[in-house]
Length: 309
Figure 1 (cartoon, one colour):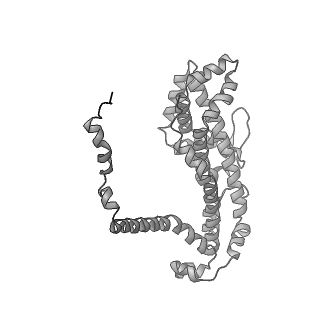
Figure 2: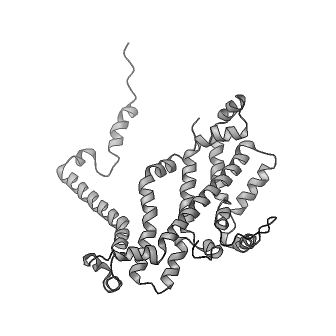
Figure 3: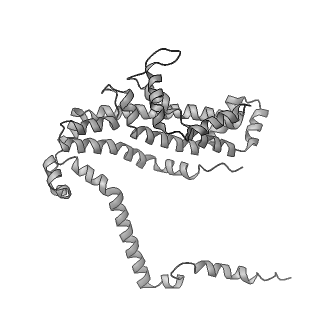
């Protein structure tokens, strides 16, 4: 017995999908159209490369150029001799090397603090679900509507005199690490992701005798690696560019990050060439890190929407 013929609308669908573009599929096979498409794609690619790599390449060349060349002819520095000593002066003389190391320490500590606090709060609200959970969740959401600047004064007073401990965290990395953990946005994002994890996984772990901590470590965290990667990326980027709070609590130059050291270098009497070398060194580290871990970052951002049951 022969199969019934497909509906007419279904038979037309593939042909209609091919003709959805401005130019039909048959026209695209023409040599003139293909040449025109290739030219447009090449021009767009060149423009994207110039817009993306142009400022970075100019900063790289300016970092090894003289101050007079940078001021007199900014676009003509490509044909001037290189002065590699600028990088050494910026690394040692301007103490950019120490500032970069301080920035790495602050970013690592802030990221760890953010993960510990955000994971604990999201796990409490999403999985453990205490009776007073909705009140805490509402309080966390309410803090999202408060500008961060208005909390600087009470937070600074708390850093100067920690409650119960009666110690000052001024000029210590803890003054930056601890406030970084109080991120309501990260808690909300993690809670929504934890809500998307099927409860059957957790119930099965509880039946096998796993406690709340074991469920978190063995079930929730392994399934949450994509969103945790996004949180780590946002925390590192936010800590790397943070300026006002580290400037307030870290008055010791030996502890200041590069975001605080660069404006001080520009306000001083340092030559412009040394300032450009310091700027290039400060932007080179995050660019290299992103180039190395870009697959992990993009994979985490792309798969952070939820977990399929």
